Length: 213
Picture 1 (tube, one colour):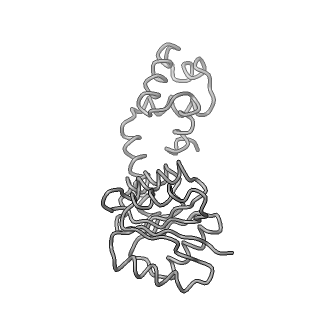
Picture 2 (cartoon, rainbow, N blue to C red):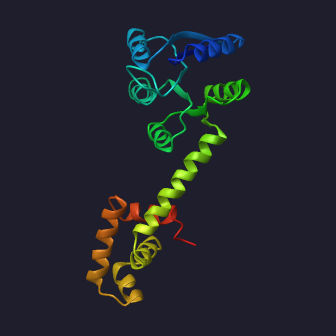
């Protein structure tokens, strides 16, 4: 089986090095390369029936960046996998890409063996995130959780924990020696603060914040 790959990077030396590396793989063909995401979109639009298995892209590029390109591919051509290879390992960028179903993220500091491992892993249908990227993302998630916990009052944490443990409003009121109306007010406040829509969302957040033993 032959895999078709598209490359997008505005750094000429990196792009040429990547092409040389992939050219050594007998079952991989670079069917197109470009210096920005807009040209990749144009190519995909002009070749709707062509098999493309993977797009490897940088983040910072003129005309269209890698995040926008990934979003376009996942919306218009979801059968195509995406791998971001970038010097930027900013947690917000990583999060934006994960939220839009990117298949992998690798630092440009990675060696050629890891890059090929990432490509092979994704072509087999799995996700690949380098250790440095995972650490940066987990650190960001931890910091966000810490900030959220600090944002909640002690009483709000108590109410959130009991909601997650499936106690009714009246049972929570009895446990905390508060009125049912007060517990309902806490619940509404928690929904607003945590930006969720319902009790299920509150329960997921309680688990995420480690409030359940």
